[in-house]
Length: 81
Image (cartoon, rainbow, N blue to C red):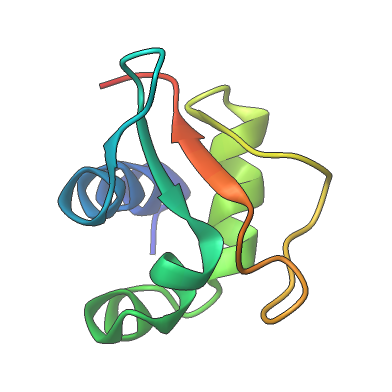
């Protein structure tokens, strides 16, 4: 699958699952994304898609890599709507 297409789908899923934070940006917890059935069916490698989106400055999150369980409460913030 094309990585640009996956990043676009990730933006859609963050909009679907997230909510506006204090800065008016859409934000969702990593654990919510990771444990969502629809996301599990769409993304073969969610962590890889998140890293690609961060590299393209579409999203932001603390750290370089998010791991299930350890980083479930980390906010994934959408930088572009």
